[in-house]
Length: 359
Ligand code: SF4
Ligand code: SF4
Ligand code: F3S
Image (cartoon, rainbow, N blue to C red):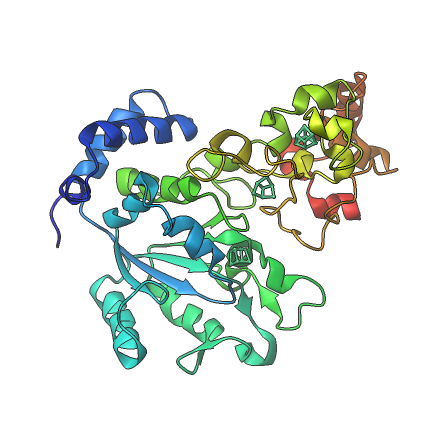
């Protein structure tokens, strides 16, 4: 067992001051009360490193790249020093039989206590033969490891919802982790890839409180996926004024107008990009001039079409839900929302997905 985590971080050159600041920011992003930042720092500083087993399935390594931030070590990256990453094929030094032995040992030594992180979807076609590690299918490996885990974190849209491998015609029979495992707590951290700080937020919560954060109906942490991109987008005032860029290089685009008509899926995408941003808070897709693709939603890739603008469906109930989400102009949102309520439509923040709009 290693010493307290704070010692590890100090050895990595992280000052106590920046650690406290990081915890305060994380607590605020997770909508925890102000005192929680200090409590989180104290708990994390004193905690012992829990074991983490990370299994990569049908994936592109983008999730690992995003989360380890290998190009630029950061405090988020260093949070990974706070866990004992006992098995991660991309990062571990061991290979071949040695690696497989490390996995079995990690399971044996930490039964019922380790956190299982999975990136990539699970291939089920041909009994899972489309994706194997050491001659064993991902499907088989998942069923072998998951029963011994305390909880599972499905990292990235592939693991959370099937992602790109599940896109039509889904030749490998790709499914999400939650389609296979039904008897373990699972946190979905979607995004293609997910934002690093969201992932470390989940880890920090587990380290601090020994539990998983509050989740929405799709198993996503509410603290990071509670609002749409559109809810917090800095271009929103242009949307409300009806000022839309028509092409990527027209006058409106140069003035930073709303990208809705260029296919932005921000109104139906739940993620924290607009507030947390990417690359240590440098920018995010919409700030870079491209609409949100809806990469953290269940039907990312098939749903919506990248450059097809969201349209108001003809069906009044769907229209009501959409209006509530996009905050439709000219005051129609409230009246449609009321009609939706009377008609029994689900709450807007839980309802509209890319798939709903495609139906
Ligand atoms: Fe790659 Fe995206 Fe899947 Fe992550 S979610 S493994 S980045 S395709
Ligand atoms: Fe921002 Fe897209 Fe919403 Fe426009 S439609 S305000 S660009 S999220
Ligand atoms: Fe993905 Fe949209 Fe954010 S495409 S990275 S959820 S802005």
